[in-house]
Each structure stands twice: as C-alpha cells, then as structure tokens.
Length: 94
Image: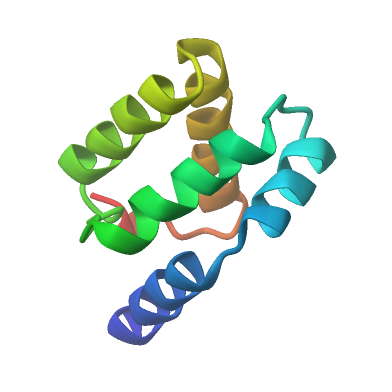
C-alpha cells in the first residue's frame, strides 16, 4: 500500500502547475510570484526528488529557499510536515 501512496504523491508533484502552486500559496498564506512558482515547477519536473527521505526534503527545501527566500521555504516545509501528520503518513517519510 505504501508504494501505491508514494507513487500517487510523486505523480501529483510532477503534474503540479504554476497556477496550482500560486493557489496553494494564497490559500496557506505564502507570498509567491508567478516567476517563482514557474521556477519551482521547473525544479520539481526536471529533478528526481525523493521527498520520502530527509535528504530529499532537505535538498528541496534548500532549492525552494534559493528560488524564493528562507522564510517562504520554511513555511512550505512546516506546511508539508503538518500535512504529513494530519494524514497519518509519518511512516512513509523517514
């Protein structure tokens, strides 16, 4: 079952659009420009990110901080961790 969930998450990440990222940013109180959202999408779609490992999450955090700023990257990481806990998926993210 966990393989299936992981593949669903990876697929959703690869299919995100800049518009969706801007929508989520607005919904969760982030400040992003369309250019930043486009750069984040490019990073997600052109890199094999292992978001299920601490190393992968750290690398994605660092890249998002470079694209936006450290505060925005930290907010995104906190939201990501909150969502993982709220869905009871901590065991997938080791």
